[in-house]
Length: 311
Image (cartoon, rainbow, N blue to C red):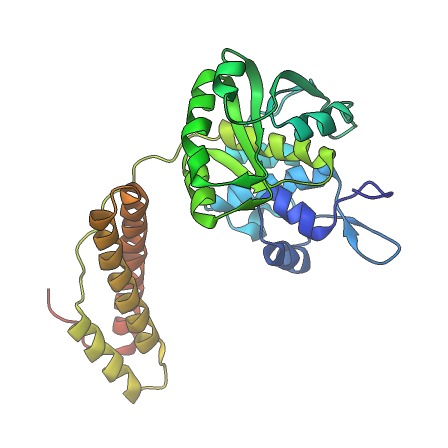
């Protein structure tokens, strides 16, 4: 935050869980916010606007087109996402692990018109031994700061989440490898680089609570077997060179790549027990994408008069 009490685009995008490039496209094409500008011309977003951007991301992730939801109010977006907004701005209760983080938050406990006050219900100076030190504590958010986060911290974080009753968990770091970040997210934690401004922590905690309110994704159906093998796709790709439209060839290339990735994910699931569930999900996702593209190619082939293999 600066003297004008606003987040710059990069920070606002990060707090909302968006790539900054996506935010810029949404601004340019759909006018998703009316952010003010600094004297230097930079966009500045309030905490309320960041919260709305986070809701937009969630409903888009659920399958709604950004063009149809871009101008919706917060209440409409929350209802669409299946989230019940609190009618009052009560203090946000935190169980905090990290001495420096607790100090920063203690100095910034008062709320604003758009961000709740922070109430620290339990603290521990470091992650090691935290599960025993604050066992039984209750909070809205379990907030953990570990400047250098490694995979070795995973058992302690799991034990801590079992020992503390919290609706959501936020893990802040300064340095962390991508594999550990991925594993933390797979375990339901919101993971982010430690912000320099304590007011950003409240926004991250609100984002984590919003995510906790969403129902978990249901089991996806297995993909059907391939309709077209590589030889049949190659034949369709070759036939498309005799007409003006090259889309059949492009779709055939995409389908071969998706099928290859589907097989690759299955091999990863069998080879690596630790990541088996993740690679199984990747394989299912690739299979469903393949099914959609097979439908598209079949429609296009009939439209262009290309011979489809008999089934």
